[in-house]
Image (cartoon, rainbow, N blue to C red; front, side, top):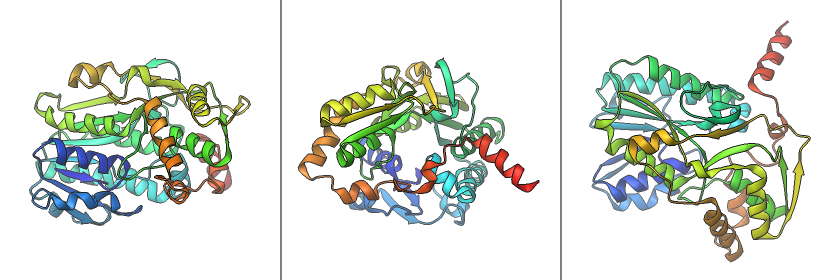
Length: 341
């Protein structure tokens, strides 16, 4: 098994699940943009774990895939802000390198390639959407994910592919992030004693990082029974929440102020149906936002999670000017075209 981006937030959790719950040997490759401390415990399983430090853009992929049967790819610049900040790297890592990896997997007879995508590909919807719904990229991040999805589903005829569109992830893990929605609200409440929610009536589906990892493991365990090409939303129907609901949950726990900014339009708002993965894999979530919020808050109160960790565990700093750029991908591209004229 090869886990690309296996030192990251979801990737290290998947590696933990694979080593704990299966007999698979796991090879992790990671550029180590955020360090590799998340993988330290795995080295004790020296007969089943191997670490390769390197950039997927420049590594010898055929050599990397030697002895590998299954591949999951998490390597990406994750999120709207970091992709806006580094658009060339986002294009190279999120899309170009992923498609080169898929080609190498097909060339080397990999049994199944799993691609980590996102429910944010749906953009803005009014009703619940399933995998048959149209996608609408509102950011470069989503656009790269959609481009890869379409290529995997329509090209690479000899490669079995599963696309997993993950809901918004939350929860503590070996390597955690504090710029995902639930965690970001907690960080603001802890540091500023206040949460400002832009577009509080906007909807998001949520999923614990461990549940995301369980879905990946189940995909590989049931690979032989899956269609050659399949796209799955990964989440839980009862974890579709409006942003205001999450804010109130954190407000109650940390006794902070809650500011609801309805003037700021929420350009992304989507409610997602997860029946397909439930019916196909038997997947259901076992964690909840309420429990995780309490765990994280308790970690802050006890000093387990430090201020330094809060500030370092973000892909783009809270005070970075790129966070104030609220334009959609279409608006950014239109501005670029105008500048060329």
